Image 1 (spheres, rainbow, N blue to C red):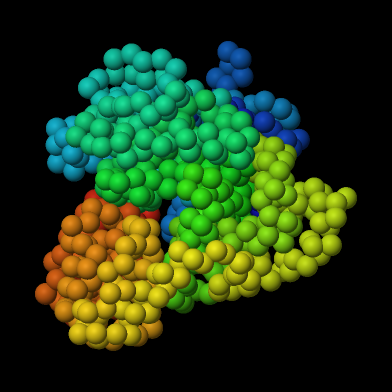
Image 2 (cartoon, rainbow, N blue to C red):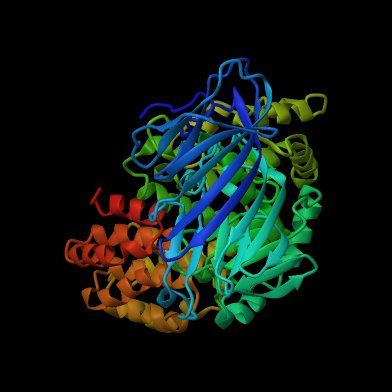
Length: 613
């Protein structure tokens, strides 16, 4: 594939020559055809003299017209679309008239999306909780905005947008923007803070809301909205804690939308309207930390953005770092460190399984010249990135020294898109005239940014909560069932987060003595696992059942894999089943049956996990 552009390897657009400043979306939502139909008007800023053409990203989009708008003049322009590059998309070329000047330029593009646009998911009524109305939602990160709107689909470009959406009158339309005006069957939106294309988001369904705070609501289908309001009741506290850490919240509104189970991520930080998976509904708020993560993105990612996805750690490493600080301020320093140590267990598992054949993708800064962002997606930028920041914080003197820098960094690069070197320069600039500059000289940037595998240095964490789970995992992996039955240590009280961590460490144990039906049953009865509504617990239990090769419980495993299409859960389950010869045919049969209910990013990656692609 090679690099598609000089600024962003995954985008044809040329932000060094022309950038989008504002876009106006006019969409009619057609549930019967599963398409968006309408137009976009882009206001560009031309940076280059005599620009001959505009290059935009598209994917399976049917463009019908392109028009240059200059005052009252409407000038049709020639356009053509290149052949597709697998998993990336196509180049839309708009030919400009000779002598196009620098400055403002308005172009209208009339188009419709494909009925199978990779960034849109269309659910028929039977796939919703209410069973009466259809539902549609988008997921544009990393590079799927191009399947929804012809655009400069690169995080190097940020623009504001307005939108007018025509939709069935009985349904509610929501976007990553503020509702400006509502009429029957038509909703107007305004996003006044510049965002990259991957943060354009829409959802339409039979949705209702409950208040969570002054500028915060939770939206969901009627059947679960009250449970959602209870589960996410700490949202306002998290938002205030994040503002104290990071500075003013610029997005005005912070709403949550609890998605259908086919949503492929834990959460998506769409501005003004975070999308979250229903797998967070544990009944005890134990998984609501994902909301802290998405709130943190309001600064790290949405306000200060990676210039391309090779530097994705600037979005996600910073966000995990800030999320852990929110948790620390609300639950204490021990919980903060326990969370970061648990992340390292997850990273170890990711390196052992998902990335075992692609060690180059375990670097903090990756090369995406010949790899799409979806294929590179892993926990590395999240966990290796946040570990690097914790290492820097400890090196420079702890939170009292590092948090003022963090606020300054966020202020300096607000509304901008940056690369790793920009962060590095800001760090050196901030500390250059202080007594900390000598500590900075100790940092081996090359090692941290380009070494493969686990972080080169693990910071000193408080291990008191983690030691309990390490000891439990050791006990369960080395002792026989008969020895465990009478062992009082297995009956000690542990928190839900410790239970999740312990099960994760047990999965990572190299050898587990007597991993059979009796041991799984003892595990289930000791920790009441069969009664758990916690998706993280059920996920880990199912992986242990696979490892025990309990073929009589295969239906149960597949039922869990079908209960949600969150990639964090279904990808490892399918990978584990693919490595179990007896179960692999059933796993493939099931995947083929349900893959059309998945978003493209999910089905595409699982196809690869199963060796089908």
